[in-house]
Length: 336
Image (cartoon, rainbow, N blue to C red):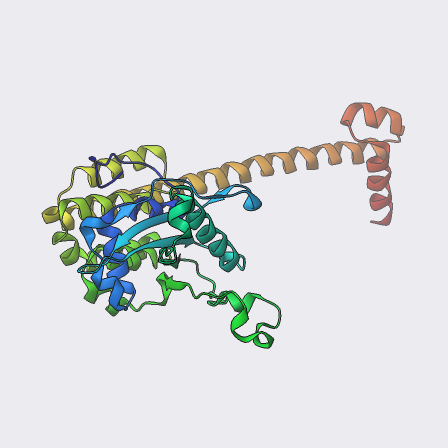
């Protein structure tokens, strides 16, 4: 994982980019402390933060598994709890139900590793699980934050219904100024993720150059890998390799040069694509013109043969036209 070994560059879809990024303890802690304004977020002991490298799979949901599960401990307190994070790029109204099932699976796993005698004790307590949803889609998130709001008429049953509230971190809800003021890896990632075009990504990278320069080596590597994945989607393999080479060889202090070189390659790639599109359009137009010319020539021959009194069978053999087409030409000619 990113914390234990030198990360190799990997190509990943955008929707799994966050999972890769937040597999780094440093990045995960930064996310929690930057975007969750609660006391426990500041009190997490980074040294005792452990990613649970285990699949919690829901068979009811086509074997979907939880994205990220961390076990954490609060500083100066012997309190262990879990953080469950789901990563979403689309609005999903089953999220509250899935979160409940994931939490149940985590608790079930804990019970498996505890003796029955210990679990029976009056003092035995299950750890708290904090559910978080990180959403980076464009549509408004309209899924209820409270689980009980997904139930039928929960108000009739007061406190007798199961309930919890998950934390929503909505990437697109933050203003540019807020993210720039954070001056850290996750603020930079969110700002780039909000961009709606390659040109806007480049402009935002330029604004972030000061932040990027101050990143630690691990943060810089994570940011470059994440950003490169976005920039190279839909670009030719040759240009993709060129961009990858530029970014992988760069260092934080060279960020302006890196951005300039990447921008140059992308502009060249877009220009080449535009030229290729124009060329294909011209070739298509020429082919269509030739086809129309041939078609007009054949029609002219058919008209001349009809005027000369040739029979339809003979015209069909000479022109390749069907009987119906020749009859139509004949009718148009007579009307004219």
